[in-house]
Amino acid sequence: MKKLIIVGGGFAGLKAALTAAFENKENDGNINITLVSQNDFLVMRPRLYESNPEKMRVPFRPMLDTLGINFVEGLVSKIVPTEHTISIKMTRALEMEISYDQLILAAGSVSKSLPIPGLKEHSWNINSYQAAIALDGHLLKVARLKNIGGQNRFVILGAGITGIEMAMELRSRIHVHSDDATAAAIEILLIDQADHIGPAPSETTAEVFEQAFKEANILVKLGQTITNITLNSILLADGEEIETATVIVTTGLQANPLADLLDVERDASGRLTVDGSLRVNGVKNIFAAGDIAAAKADDAHMALMSCQHAMPMGAHAGYNAVHSLLGLPHQKYAQPDYSTCVDLGEIGALLTKGWDRQIVMTGPEAKALKQKINGSYIYPPDGNAADILAHSHIDAHWADSNQ
Image 1 (tube, rainbow, N blue to C red):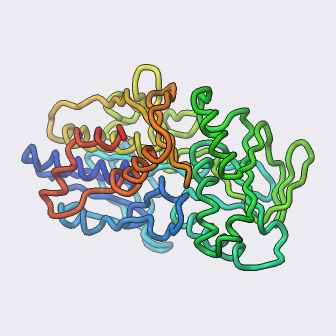
Image 2: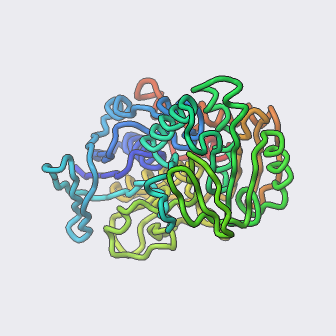
Image 3: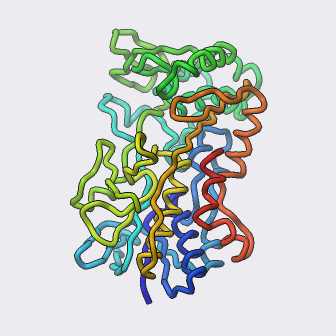
């Protein structure tokens, strides 16, 4: 029996496992599929800016059991491509080695380290489930405790999509832990070293974001960098000191350090370079998908670190890995359609289409779409085996990616 190992239980890894199970069944294969992850749940990472982050995860073990997919909980510590083996740390004292015929690496991304003194000790982020829960605990304390220096001022570092959504949602998150007056009284400051709000190109979206921040009473400082963070303040490069008890970092991601276990080419973000089938360049029998893979979405653009790209990449990796084991043709990964739907809190949302970010929809209509994306489209299928597999074909991802 051939062995397919998938490392990573995020959007790409789970999609790879489900698509692999579909292709194995569809082609009467006899492939043993195993998913390796540090946790047995899918974190709804795109939703971690929202209130109640403890609800933003979905157990996937029952789904894997329904499809006969094996699960190993642990951290991959070693990959030996020449021997087709990986080592998995189960606990501090327990480690196991397993072999594979095909391997898919889909371990996602981690926060990019920033050289700011005090950042590790005195800042928060929402790049993981644990980090989002920790931030929420801090927001609870700040909202309810009095006489804390900078208690009412919240600084968000990074004016990209995550920073925008965090800023627009923050007043609602404080309200969950307090009352109308407390939430209304807070000051929100968004800081970025760039000279524009949101991802580039910003010309078409700048006016929408600026108006949204004005209505939400959010102050923006562009062309600024933070040089130091303390318990109750930040220092900007121009010498200005700002009192605050809360600094939330939303800047930059880099590939999971798992990529460093392979002695192969990586891009500036640490991602493994791959070919059109998502096979890792420089090694055999290893695919990569999601945030850990540097893949071409089309002739001019690289896939981004987002679930919009991770799920289709995972589907293609699962498809191609199974087809490699069965001696069947691959499908080339491509994702020429690109869109973004940015949550603007009570004001609504902004939907853009294309890499040039042409505005398609704003306001309540866009907000309704954003709620469907966050509440339905990005969630894994459930039900019996037939229901799950019906949503796991490689073509099913287009409904996800084009929202």
